[in-house]
Length: 312
Image (cartoon, rainbow, N blue to C red):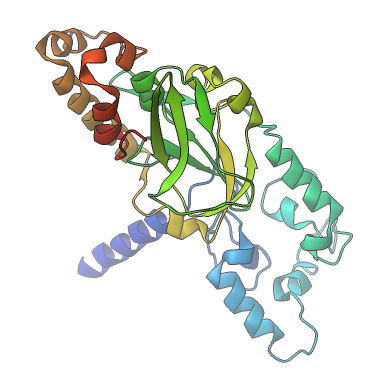
């Protein structure tokens, strides 16, 4: 009984350490698919470049060779019936077609690999499904930072960042958003961007550490998009993280994000007073623009309480 409980705890720990990717439906490690190791799940959203397991395996297979080679690539040729060189993206489920590799698994020089990355950057995916907590929308398969920014892990490890629904309802539609520059090095829990409304300005924390690869120029030209559609068209920027798994630490996901949002809602209700608390208890929807509806609370207080930042 004790051994069974220990195995269950180990499996639960492994599941917690797996990075949950947005619409990444495959989860078997490429080395496992190639038959090089026993059943193993990918825990790094197929970001092989920063995966410690992949790096260790490559070192093992390349140890006796002067020219680097991919051990799984050599082995996979013998176990797939439709081709002896299946594309890595077909193996990981990123594409459904029986795609053949024409570049000897040198993905960094592959035009098809670059095209898939470009498509990801152009956001050709379905909109996120949402659930509610205390009346606030939360997109499923997103991670949430305590400063009310979200992080969405894409296939290959890139991370898209934006504001959550609680944030945009709290401050209303911004008049200006200042995003980080391309190539900027952001650090988790430190200022990642600023936004303003009239004469008021506040800083929002970056939910992850990494280098900025792309920014959403549309939200700089039309900041109202963030308020209208925070989880899809209102995304802010994309980051190449140093390591996806490390970036998930301290972020809320799934059930934890729902419970955290409920706690934040209760905190806000206490600030608004008994009258609004009674309205919420009766099932009323959250106010769409807290700052404009309750100006007596003050911009600074809202920023310090929910963003952990002061008016700038």
